Length: 83
Image (cartoon, rainbow, N blue to C red; front, side):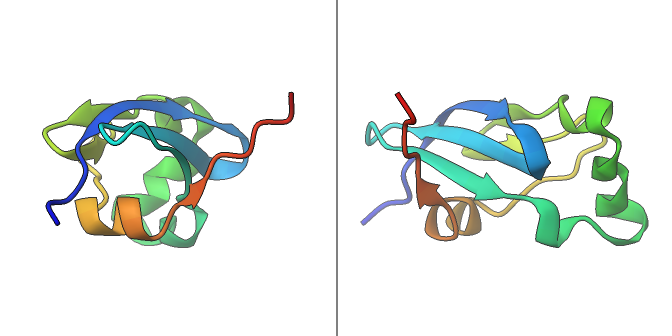
């Protein structure tokens, strides 16, 4: 199966992002485990974290930090609405 394509991304609280895939799935990916060192450590700034956007088949921040598409899909969990 081909990797699902990212259509939308929205930053959430606690260094998580909501990702909408072309499969119709809405999934939440926890970025916090990645936030360390000089490169990904910049994501600790919440305003910088909010610069996340869709680029190609994945997500990327203003400084070029990105998550591999397979990790983004495989390591995220289905969004559970509280409504």
